[in-house]
Length: 179
Length: 179
DNA sequence: CGATCTCTTGACCCTAGTCAAAATTGGTGG
DNA sequence: CCACCAATTTTGACTAGGGTCAAGAGATCG
Picture 1 (tube, rainbow over the protein chains, first blue to last red):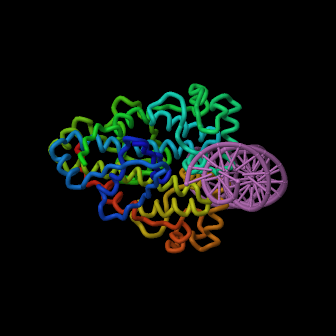
Picture 2 (picture 1 turned 135 degrees about the vertical axis):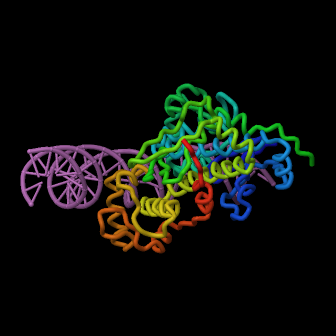
Picture 3 (picture 1 turned 30 degrees about the vertical axis):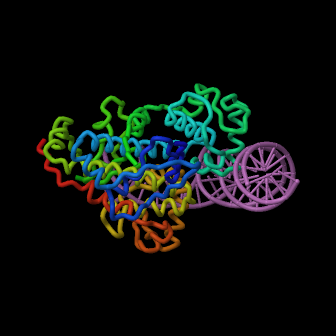
């Protein structure tokens, strides 16, 4: 599974969970759109099955609730960083991606276009920011996005991963989907 | 109860509910700060009580979960509008406030400073936007923020209230707190 | 070896921020 | 009731971060 997808501006990674909004609010049209950034495989779970599982395992409900709260935290955090200059904003986004990918440094499988989209900046400007980040020794000189100095990156971003601490725990379910 | 408060940039209104993050994630330091915009009275509920109620009324858990999801929707929506020009952004914020206040038009009990803060714009610029909105006949010429043409406002904001439809339902609990 | 997508670069523009000062308003106390 | 103070709201002048347009340079892939 090489999954990477977008929920408007929240990049999802392999193992992530998606679509609970429409589970909780069946009547509301699906408000958020999803788009695959790479080829990926997706497992679906029927509403009934979820209901049933929730019945049997109350803890599951709590966990999903937490997941929703964490998602809200991610958005809240982004709203905050959105008010900071572009460099910081991008740096923060990269930190978030690293954390959610569960790696400390290395390649982030996104194009500059994707980052521009996620950060709400023009591709042109993103490109200039990336050049700065390379200059600063945070990114490698490679074409792809490779973080080589995470510490410096975190500094720039003033990144405090606490708000994500648990998304790991929450989004990486050991789901046993048979089909 | 004349409550109005802020959770970073989400304005809370009388009857709103607050602080579930720290209920779900006790270990994480309270990440979001709260600040009163006006004098207000606040009721608190002990963690244990919540646990207990959740035990007795499974539907409560579901409702709170929905609330979290709705909060995430609000933030998501804001991230989207953040990318639109200031006028639209402010218009959208005003629409959101009206909806969450449960009124169709009239006075929004915020200062320009508050709006600036919530919208992430400078006071100076907010002021100019407000002048435009008055010119457009959306706001009254009063000093305070009074919406007199909601339809026009919604148009400007491209406001689709669906994402809030239920926040009403969710945040206005008929709580019986016997402190 | 085109065709196409992504990344770069340069020139120019415009939205929104900053600074600073004035004009209104709302109290508050004498 | 008036004078004074503090908090908002307005205005004006200037600045700057980031957008847009357009074209060129690498990559990738069939």
